[in-house]
Image (cartoon, rainbow over all chains, first blue to last red; front, top):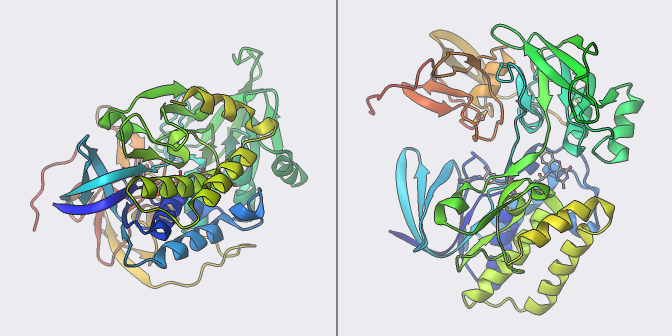
Length: 359
Length: 104
Ligand SMILES: Cc1cc2nc3c(=O)[nH]c(=O)nc-3n(C[C@H](O)[C@H](O)[C@H](O)COP(=O)(O)OP(=O)(O)OC[C@H]3O[C@@H](n4cnc5c(N)ncnc54)[C@H](O)[C@@H]3O)c2cc1C
Ligand code: FES
């Protein structure tokens, strides 16, 4: 059996940052990534990020991915990366089963950092499975990574930041965005993103949602309607729109099933996106030496995923006896950065959610 | 359809790859996943639901939902959104759970 001190599951911003900080502390690791390249959700984000300099504000997501990957490549002897490899099994004695090209590989490790991220939620409506209906992030991948358009006429469901940003990027790529539908009375995302769209003449229809999709083999049109206070459709407000694509952007839920498999204590916290593990202040779960970082323990942003990755990498290394020369300073800095990222009115629900999972 | 002009991104000409889709020879480019190459040709139906045989296209593009499963080089249930296209690949639409196949 292959032996390695630390296995990091998921090569997104959280996993990459954890590996870097562990390596800086002297601890070797293996990053396991099921996609054909590392970078996680960042590889498709062409927009510039907010936040402070420390988390690469004003840099495009795709460029942040490059920086994080380059950082990791600086440690070729300490950080091993396996792509197109999925973690399919996790056991309490810290054995990890990998599936690579139809072969199962077992790895014995001392510590595990789970950084599997999150997946886009689906929305229930008639014919929601028709081809032509996609997650907004999926469309972002198709356009920005592969240079392929989803279609010509699209409607976006959900006006959170992802819905707004992807709508803008659809227009940049030359797609006609008919409107954005938002069930709530207010637009969910930041005002800057919404204003950018409105300036381009895109109607953001609040108190509206999709009622049904119509099409034989793939999407041909949709029926939308206005919602009352209880989010029920108001009779007589239906409208038919001819579209070939519909993007769903109604939030993400943590990909935490590996944690359930190993039996860590979990809790459903809607503010964090779904089922998440209970953690202590150092991101350790109820099972010793099993840590989490990034969206898997609460859907947030790339900036916080990066800092959480650094923090867990630093802490895990120390636990295994590899103490970073600037441990104390870095620890306080990462904690302060996370605190700042979550301050303010936009962070309120998140703060309440995080309180619920503290062990 | 492929993006030709973009304010931020550039998509350089890449090497053309030929592959077979349900027996017909078609083309994609290096760097494509199977799903992106098919999508660029306008193919949206990739799989079918097991019971009712409803058409399915891709949904998540991160290898999570299995809505893009196809038969690739004889092997069923391949998630085409995270599988890179290769020259001469044989890609087929899947309509059942997938049959046990001979490995070579
Ligand atoms: C469409 C979209 C737009 C966004 N826009 C912004 C933005 O503008 N600003 C911002 O700050 N944030 C944004 N985010 C959020 C940000 O991208 C995420 O918060 C961040 O990527 C989370 O990092 P992560 O490392 O936790 O997870 P991810 O980036 O999701 O990475 C997780 C990795 O784990 C891998 N993985 C999962 N399961 C397994 C397994 N079993 N075995 C092996 N590997 C596995 C996945 O393939 C993936 O590469 C956006 C997200 C989306 C979806
Ligand atoms: S589209 Fe979800 S697994 Fe491929």
